[in-house]
Length: 242
Ligand code: NAP
Image (cartoon, rainbow, N blue to C red):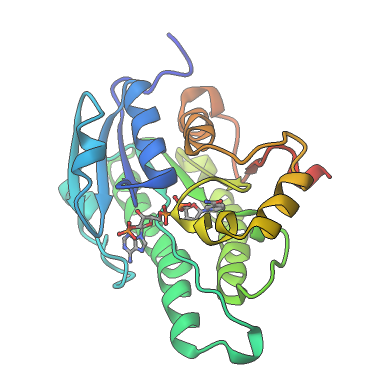
């Protein structure tokens, strides 16, 4: 048996229409998984690139949106990837920009994980959760206070859920991507000074590609990672070590 294969498994990836989520869905499909590509809009472009895939509309504007999904679909691997970011000075930050980010990036991640775990525990099966955290699970960032609060929360929650579910057959881990070229970071790449400052600090000397995160997610969801619980794996070109 290839311990890195996902053959026979079904993965549900949130926010799979673009960016990191799209790359994770494609990488998992390549590793042999059947993939349910979930998003608040169509994931048809992602589905078309995977041998066995389907799409599901899930909008985490309602953080409980996934409550019934795992009773309706057998899922072995949950990837909590969907996320948003709002930028503003902390003194001007609005309640709406706080709530929107916390709802999608933290509250929906917990209640989706809970719904998944209930289904896996009910069938006495095995499962893996991979949540997309951030460098801002460790660092403060600037002008992104709700995002940083949510991503620190995700790192802590990953450890709590691992503590509760590791012995029950569910691996719970997270990935902290560094600076990855997606819609989420377009504003940074469009600012020449900010772009250069970021590049100068990355030991690998380049922005990350979504596929860099995709391959790491395959590993954490695979049998090769069976004794890994509660980890937040940085995939950052060396940023955090600097
Ligand atoms: P992205 O291209 O903006 O993708 C974000 C995804 O989340 C999109 O599919 C988006 O759907 C989806 N989403 C947003 N709100 C949603 C909602 N209410 N319901 C369902 N789906 C929703 O950005 P990305 O960089 O790939 O981000 C993916 C994850 O990586 C996020 O959790 C982000 O925080 C994290 N991350 C990214 C970086 C980076 O450098 N790019 C670094 C660290 C962590 P729409 O297309 O419809 O908006």
